[in-house]
Image 1: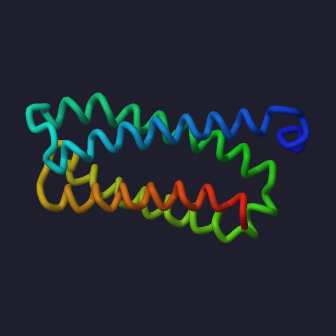
Image 2: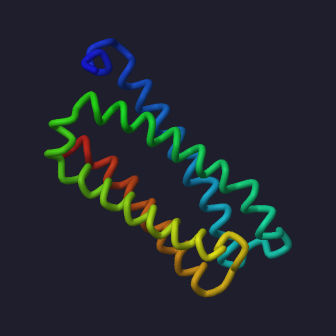
Length: 138
């Protein structure tokens, strides 16, 4: 995969795709989480989940696919980078939180546990983005 880093514009294009994926993921997730926290109570939570969460999933898929290609192109550097390792660990925790949230039907609940889980989710994703930015400086 050396072509990813040697062919002009490939790596920057991957970074741009990665950022678009993150934007879709976070943007749709924040809208859904704001509703769980009580904003926009006139909007049906289930209907919003059916609209927003597929966009969240698509954003994650786009970010994960582009991130995987960037990772493979610089495997040794990334594995040695503490910010990258933290980012991957936080993504795993965010995934477990999402799995628990959805396994209990959280996308149709706005109870205390859902609010706590969505707050954790937002905090994790913001930390993941911060770690992603720090990768370049480690």
